[in-house]
Length: 419
Ligand code: AMP
Ligand code: GLY
Image (cartoon, rainbow, N blue to C red; front, side):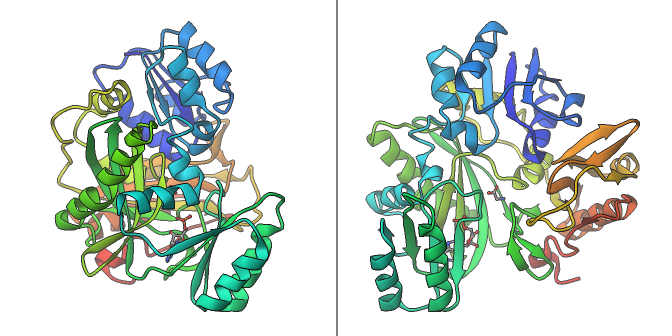
C-alpha cells in the first residue's frame, strides 16, 4: 500500500513511526515531513494546504492512501481534492471538518443529536454578546468562532475578563463569538475512527494544556500527555461513545456530510458523566504520541478501512503498558521564542529502555539537532505503570542538554501524584 501523509510535527512523527512498522506498507511519502520523519519515509516539499498540488502528486505516485495529520489542510479542502482525484483519504471533507473549524456548528450538531455539552449562544455583534455576559455573570467561557489553534478560548473568572475577551474577538472584521457556561470536572481526550457509517473507539489520553507545572500559565498546544488516564474508565468511554460520538456522527451522515477519519472528542468528566467541550477533526498532538506507543495492532488497516468505508470489524489491540510523553519546548513558548539552538543528547535519550523521542520541531545540523519551533521534542516512554513510564521519560529528558528549552516536571500527575 503506497501511503502519503501530510504534516510535519510530533503527531506526524509518531504516526510515521507506527506506519513504517506495517507489513502492508509500500512507498511512504510525507509532505512536507521533517528531518526526523525522514528516518521513516521520503519527505517531499509539497504544501499540505494546496489541495490541487497534493491531489496531482498523489495520483502521479500511485498513492493508495492519503493520511491527513493537521487540521489546516482539512479546512483547505485537501480531502475533497484527493477524493475527487480517486485517492482514498483518511481525513474528513471540509464540510465534515466543520465539527472542528466552526465551534458554533459543532454546538448545533451536539444540540441536534442531544449530546451533553455546556449551554451556549452565538453572537455576530459585540453589544448583544456583552449583554449576554452581563445577564449570565461570571465565570463564563468566550470563544472565537473559527479555527484558532487553541488560542481563541478564554475561561473568564470575571465579567471584566469576559468583556475584554469579547472585545478582542470582535476586533477582527467579520468575527463571531460563542459564549458558553463553564463545565467543571476533569478533561480527557477520546479518539474514534469513523468510515462514514461505522464508528469504533480508538483510544484515549489526558493531555496537559497549560505551560507550567500544576496546570498553571498560558494555554499551549499541549505540554505532555499520558495514557491510560484514571478518569477514562471503560464505563466513561462507553458513555461518551453512546451519548456523544455516535449520535454526532449519525447526525453528520443525516446532514449529507458523512465523516471519514478520526474524531477527537475533548471531554469534561464529572461524576462519571462526560460532556463535550469540543470536537477536533484529527488526532491530538501530543496525545497521538502516547496512543501510538500503546497500539499493538497494525495502524494501516484502520486508517485505510476508515478511508474506504470498511473499518475493520475487530477492535484495536492495545499493549498492556502505560505511556507518557513530555513536551520539551523553547523558552518563551507559547509566546515568542528563539530557534536554531543546538540540542545535545537526543540519541542517548532515545537509547534508554522504553524511551522513544518524537520530534515536533527540529532540524538536523551536522551530526546533531537544532530547535526549529515552539514545541520541539516529545520525549516519550512506556512502562508497567504511569509512574514507571513517567520516571523513564524524565530520565530521558535529563539526558538532553538544551539550555534554551523547558518542560513541565509533572506530566501524568493525576495518575501518580504531584512531584
Ligand atoms: P477548546 O479550544 O475549545 O478545546 O478550549 C481550550 C480549553 O479551554 C479546553 O481544553 C478547556 O480547558 C477550556 N474550556 C473550553 N470550553 C470550556 C467550558 N465550557 N468549560 C470549561 N472549560 C472550557
Ligand atoms: N492536544 C490537544 C490538541 O491536539 O488539540
